[in-house]
Length: 403
Ligand code: HEM
Image (cartoon, rainbow, N blue to C red; front, side, top):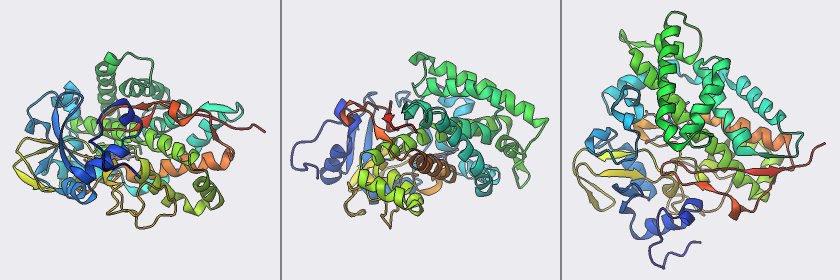
């Protein structure tokens, strides 16, 4: 249990990055819709209770369009107003409805289902590369490469170009060797590459997702070339760091809860529910992406003024005791697990079927192939990336016996 009687805990400190849950428990109890100053200097509301969070995610008076805020300080890349950033997570209906309908025609559950053998092969190939060594860093060698190669394959990025993508993506989430200031450069390179790839595919359609995006039409409407590039970019971006952290945070939670892990190893039928519980317990998306009040509204007893930024804290909502009994307990057999890890409402994660596929393949295969996987560091030595939206480990050192 967290101490709910003391003073308000500091937000955004070093301790907070490694374990934000006590601070969120305090906020849920004492100030559930909390006005705060973010490390960037921007002021915003943090919404921490489950019911308020669910309501806010579905409330269309909370716009995704950053122009509603009129500030450049939201920490969102400066390219925001450029073409690549006019993607699903930055727009409202009716544009959002049109683009989401078009992409849903190409990114179908069937396409994801057919992709399952490829994800399994990628997973096994990555494990093959370290399984004889007896130790590995599961972030760099497993959780990081798996989603980027998977998305590249799905989109139709040729294999010979995928390592470039891996490097750009690495710079973008500060995993790679590149300097921090290299982020804008990496985005620019990715944009140039995607524009060229889409252009090329237009004349030579295949059965990959980019070709599907080009082909998709609705009442005679198609995605423009720029819309297709922005869509490919958001699929890559939304589907990458999230999945890295699902695999990283999920594996870490299993390694630190041996009895739960043993239960899962003994009964693989628990796997789908277990991945949902890992998402609820310590999901990759700590805060849903930005929303801005298009008009004044009431939320959890507070008045949100027009233009105010609102951040829905998924990690806090998913530990709300009024919704989840024993919320701080990892219970892989938990039922009635309507967590908000993939969001809610019209912006509900488009890639959830793919994320589930990758999460199950990665975690299920690791447990099966390396039954004595152990953490090779004290949990207090592990470093968490202190990003605002995402929650994830920088490294996850493990050891195991080799045959
Ligand atoms: C939206 C979580 C993986 C594509 C979202 C949102 C969340 C989320 C919380 C809503 C954000 C908001 O309302 O502000 C996750 C998690 C993942 C994951 C936890 C992995 C475990 C993926 C993957 C893809 C993807 C693999 C695609 C390949 C998207 C897209 C949106 C989205 C395109 C925007 C949808 C819209 O605005 O209509 N995701 N995601 N995500 N996600 Fe995911």
